[in-house]
Picture 1 (spheres, rainbow, N blue to C red):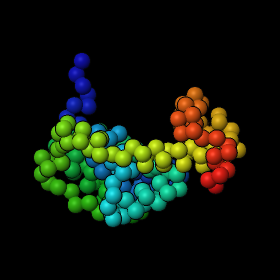
Picture 2: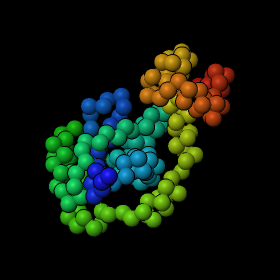
Picture 3: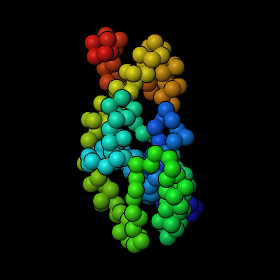
Length: 174
């Protein structure tokens, strides 16, 4: 069976999950999950990172939406069209797109080293804060909290156990 995503690039947007119709960033990647984590962990002074940091401080992570999968040789042109289309939104990227696709290619060893560099503790801390804030919002109703987070109730229970979240621990930190 042929892999339909082989030689394909995802054109994606980042949005605030509270305002999913307002696109804040447009990019391209072969590996959406890895790139999403990288966006949440990057430390530089760009507008995008300032926006992401403001979300994380509120216990929220940006949502990545795949706009479309495109052929590698068409990715720059299509990404440019999306940026042009949404430039009147509050786009945080004023990215100059490289004409040379080889500069955008990332090999597996680079991806593996990027994964190692991701600070999982800060991601876990952000996730814990998000779960706590949603539990408070829904009056500690775990079914509603899980539904809002887009996860199963058992997954929520597992995360509560992993992060040692209790009503008492939440009251102490808030």
